[in-house]
Length: 324
Ligand code: C5P
Image (cartoon, rainbow, N blue to C red):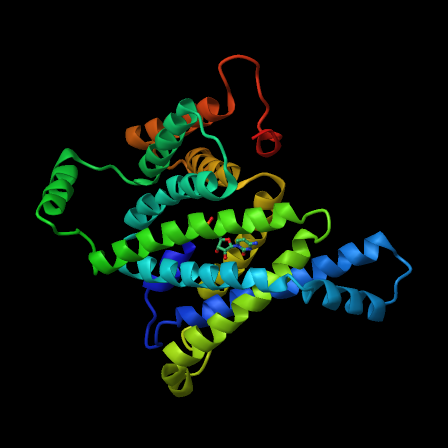
């Protein structure tokens, strides 16, 4: 929502900020944060090390022989983050949020293909319910039967009822596919070497390699002319900075989720957070409860129960990744 209002809110006489500059800044912030955390890990393992020794250790672990493996997710995540900006600039917030839930299913498909994860038919049902439930919670505002009829009939006639809808829809589908593939690839890479390479070192590698496409393709090649004319920070304001901060923090949290739980759990957590937000805004801000959103929240909770419980002995949520 913050990102949507940063892209589509009034800009006054200023030009709209360039998404490529925001993508680059997010990577710079994540790189600095991950560097700090990686150095902190080195310091904790031997508190008597000098800052120069820590810097040398971090440098050696970041540029180790297998660091090139992070080039692939770095390129794909940069592409995904740019696609999200394209989608959000061309779709309304709800259509974007609802269609982006496709990533729940693409993640599972890539987990099966790349990690050999086994998904029972009960879990498949819960994942489809989850996608449907989250989409339902996010359809905000009372939608009349007339609204639905209008949306459906324009879809049937091949029209997408949003601004530059087709471009946005293609971008969100591509972002969902990229999200599934990249998150699963990153999970495999981190988990295969978690004993020898820390998560924060992997994250420094990821952000470091992400800087190149973000800088050379996004900032210089795509938007170089506009930046030369209006400046790098044209259109920046508090809401843009908040978007950047949330994106950076979100990225770091996603990394922790992927490393210590798994991608499917990450998507469940993201879906649960949407339900918690919905409930919290009803309690705190007295936002009226909608039948379809409340139904969607119930469907999300049911999906979580179905996914984590098994017929037979009970299984806890956290050891899920190891168990599978
Ligand atoms: O939508 P999805 O959950 O796939 O988004 C993942 C986000 O997390 C992306 O914006 C990606 O850049 C970020 N990420 C990160 N560091 C990681 C893994 C993901 O910043 N190690």
